Length: 189
DNA sequence: AGCACGATGCTCT
DNA sequence: GAGCATCGTGCTT
Image (cartoon, rainbow, N blue to C red; front, side, top):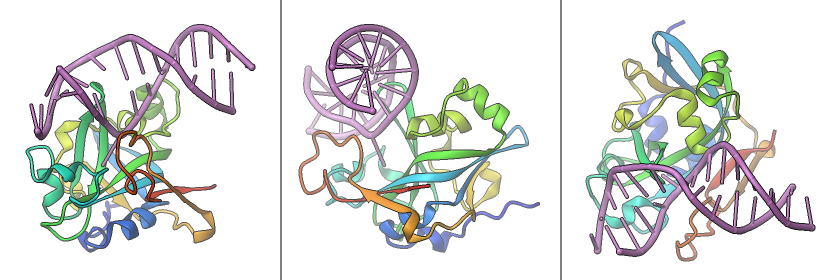
């Protein structure tokens, strides 16, 4: 089996579409030649400089530069002094947007994942990166190039009946309407 | 089941 | 110096 990452055209679309369609896809991390993977269960969309919940609200900075680049790349950032969060850059180059990957159901490399997580779940954006050993070294990596060691493949497409939407999580001081727009997607099963 | 809290360090003003 | 796109523990209902 050769890796077959989703194509760049998949990511080069409106961020809400990508966030919705990433549900049920398979996130793969090649670690020491071993596949660790999980089904994507939850995502959030962050869309442009006008979205005051998006890091790009500050414009183009060292931190946000990757979001301004071509779609299909990883935007990985550090937060709360200890956690790495993984995003997939979306929309055509020049427009800063990304989809935050918030939860997976482990599928391959279960023993290794369980070791990384000390037997706990992978339902949370920082839990997911810890499970797959993804950190800042992956920032800017191309998810469409399997030699990066990190990519997303086709998985189990989710029907609309299995998809829930709601407000994004953790944006305590973000003003409305950005705080409450229903840009969080998750599978109900 | 649901809060409250502390850990811990980078980013931008 | 303030503010984080969080997590795990520990305590209360």
